[in-house]
Image 1 (cartoon, rainbow, N blue to C red):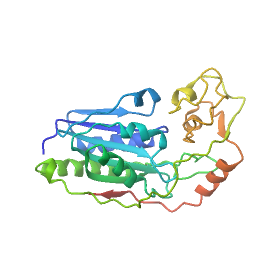
Image 2: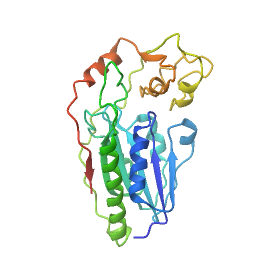
Image 3: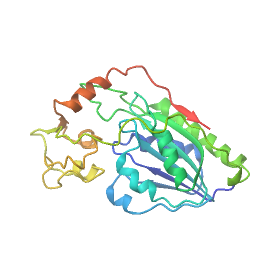
Length: 265
């Protein structure tokens, strides 16, 4: 099966999913690769169009056991034509639940043909110096596995005679999906006096929930709880307040056993 170019798509507020995707891309090692980062709201204003002579790799984080709800409309707008596709999820060391299956189902509804899937581990969004959870992941071993996964994808593409010969890919998960698409709408971010109103938090927010003129003003109805604003603040001026999110962060520290990357072909 000949692939003219590779489209690599990621939603990655804290950068872990993007790091995994870039390593997969190195393994695929195709001369014509396009990275499409849909983290920023304006990048999700355009639908993805992809054909059967392309390879599509989509990587997203897992939120509460599901594909992030902010991506639902964008995923449903994809226009594919039996495009060979790889789906990847990145989760915070607890479990990816039904998110990988949900991503597969979304892509197949858009005429994508799944050839592989994977679940990688990234540092949990709620992780902090005080409450660490899967810190430093994806690490060097994870990224090496991602590159190896990319090489395997390349081998599958080369050895597949045509799109019509692609067999159904079985992925773990249940339908109806567990987890929840309903995020907590909470005022959970504390901003201290170190804040210099540099605007980086507003720039990094994947849903435009932070006021660009006053970063302490947060639209909690838009907020996805990704904590990118906390992790990316150069002044360490933002943190999680005491309350339900802090309690969830404490629970995340219980999952200390190292989870392994899971690959599916």
